[in-house]
Image 1 (tube, rainbow, N blue to C red):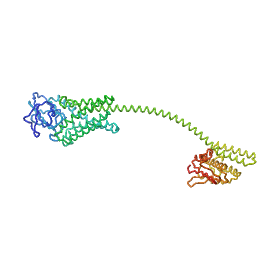
Image 2 (cartoon, rainbow, N blue to C red):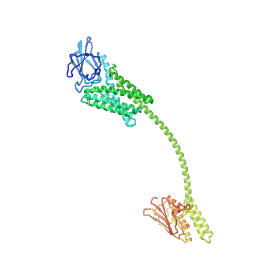
Image 3 (cartoon, rainbow, N blue to C red):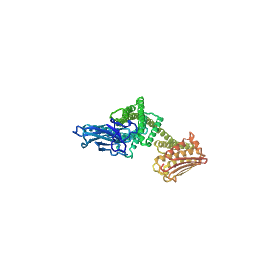
Image 4 (tube, helix red, strand yellow):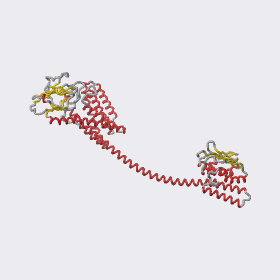
Length: 581
């Protein structure tokens, strides 16, 4: 294989300056400033012309033309800026029989700016049966594997971006999504065959350079975040230096871009490798399963990046490219990590559910015990309330009857047997009414107030006459407010207790009992005497004031309000019941 460089405007091969080279021809090994167009020449004899002859070239940078025996038989779509970018596309042709002879010359013209890859890859001539399988293998390795790699990277980027959005504290997932997106952008530069959508092909090189620099930064952030490592100063230096490199890449002249690609490739390869080695030590220290899985993946990455660097430097001549394996390997690794974390979360949830069920059982047992205690307390409260109600009824009803009997006995000089028996029967009836929960007036149905209070009035009027106490009873013909039996009974007990207190303590000679309707739809029951009066606040706090407290309790239970005003010459007890009480 012979090579010669010609002026860029030359369309014919040079006549001199040919030098022998071996393939693949690495342009960067000749130093910077080595650009096309370059001509390659292959001479061969075709003594056995019994079958077609195939030609296979695995790489050409960037665009090229092929001449067979002085005649053009193939060329790339664009041989001037913006150039075609078929540098990673294998080629396969069947050479036309009409253009072949016994002595043949194949000329290859390559047009390119500086590029960090082989100028011309391997070239093979032979039968289609020999070269077609080789070409198909090259297509799989150089095109389809990279396409699969980019597709997997984009899927992983989207998947882990969603995971990061749903769980923001998993910052490692966000950095991994960004790194996968940048890696897919790097791979896209390998697959594109034109400069579209850019006007110049160098834009793709600038974009690929920036993506590679930022990918190294994002990958370092991913490993540090995943391993729980924090290097604030190192992070600021890394991102600051990378931002500076990206700015330089987009503003520097196109002819100097190749040198920046070479320098940045070495620098960020060392950064990437150092980050991987650092995580390996961290995983060995923590011994966490997900750290060990990622460490195994990064160990493979170290091998791939090291092998790629040796190939780039020309220290190895292997045709294998392991870069397309990085995305599938990383996807398997991250799948295992996410599966492990998911299984761990399920185990924690199951353990929490077990603890929760146990806590619920304990709480249920404690609640049952508490409910039992509450039930017993409620029974005791019911009993106490019944006793209290019985005490109030005995005090208000039977107490008033006893008081009336005592006063009659004191003011009677000659109490005959029938009168004494009548008092005993009255006491017996009041006791029965207390036990049965009714009043001395008998059943309290829908009787008008005059009939409802008539038995009580008759009993107390006899007593008032003996004591010389005038009384007035003003009762409406109908109830101002519909009342149930409990409310009417409570009012009856209130009247009994109030009249009894007036006889015992007031020294009054006039009493007034009045029931009337209120403007708001309620009703009031008012008892007034002209006695000596008393201290209302003192009576409520005095231990002997059970009657006052009983009256307040009764009226409160039926939803009413009791107001007591007392001074010398006037004591007023007023019960107000609102509509709907």
